[in-house]
Structures are given as C-alpha cells and as structure tokens.
Length: 233
Image 1 (cartoon, rainbow, N blue to C red):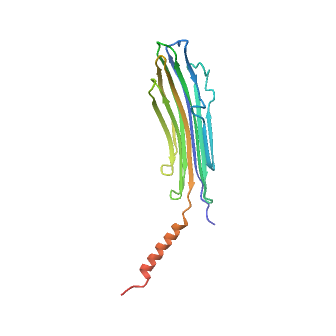
Image 2 (cartoon, rainbow, N blue to C red):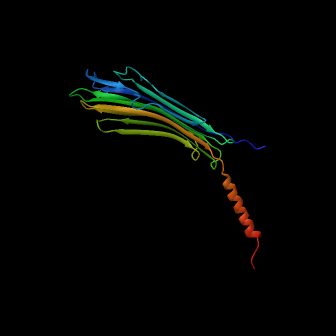
Image 3 (cartoon, rainbow, N blue to C red):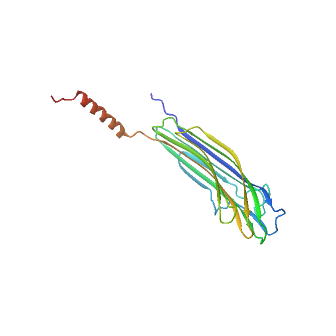
C-alpha cells in the first residue's frame, strides 16, 4: 500500500503598531490638530482566499486614544495573517492574501508655526513554508509591513520590510523590529504617516502530466530500437 504524501503548508503573520512618541512645540497651538485613522476610504481591509486557506485582518477601527486630538502614546494597530495547505492525492492548491492599513494625519492650520510629530513603528513579521518534493510542489509565504510618511508637503519617504519562506529557501523567518521617524509639517500644510501590513501564501501540489510518462516511454522505446532493432549491413 503506497504511503500517502504529507501535505505542504504555509503560515504567515504580520502585526504593526504606529505610536506617537513626541510632539513639538508643546503645548500645541490651539488650531493644530491630529486626526487618526484607519480610514476605509484610504486603505480598506482586503481578504482573498482560494482553496484550502484562511485569513485574518484586523485594522483598529478607532485607533488608540482620541481620534480627533491625539497626543503622545496614541496611535493605531494593524494585524494580518494567512494559512493554507495542499495535499496529494487528491492534487490541490491554496492561496490566501490579507491586507490592513490606515494613517495618521497632521494638519497644521497655523500661519507661522512648524509642527513636528515623532513616531515609532513596532512590528513583527513571521513566515513559514513546508515542502517535501520541489519537483511537484510549490509553496511560499510572505509577511510585509510598509510605511509611507510625508515629512514635508509634496515629498514622501518609504520603509518596507518582509519575512519570507518558500520551497527553495524554506527556513521559517521572523522579524521583530522598531523604526523611529518624524513628520515635520510647515504652516498651512498637511503631513501624514500611513501604514499597511500584508500576509500572503500559496501552496500547490502539481501532478506529473501523463504526457511526461509517455515521453519517457518513447525515449525508452527509441533506445531499445537503436540497440536491438534491425541493422543495415
């Protein structure tokens, strides 16, 4: 009785917290305010699943603290995950993708005061993919965090980090980091810091096509004919 092949699988998780760690000048001018997201119109949560897979998306709806007058220690949280497996027989596949995002806006309504807001991004990324036969199996897992911030109106900086694992480099990876940055907003301008986390994975067991075996048989037959077939004198 043939031994049933073990299923291949992927798991991936991403969590990230964006927190305000400093504001200057203090006290803020009375007509300067900070508005927190996530905002559905900016980056709605996305979940997509095909086959035997699951996802989870959590973008904190109201953030942490007062969404209309944030202070030091306020911010918001995102989390995504994806998991799935494929098996043979029967031959199967699985795909999962989840995305969460949001932003913090800094609206400087003064005429003469530059406002600087300091942030800390804390995040954890994990990805693991298992496979047993690279010839017939394909699997990968990725978790990502992407930060875009506008230090001066009209210019953007970017920060991206990824943890990944697949059938070629299958070792699980883990990233646990922090990243500090500042948004400086000139009088009458708006700055922002937007954050996204994403988790994705794919697993596929590929049946060896029947034509491959026919091709192999043809090669064997051709070799037999060349060795043992009729020869011309």
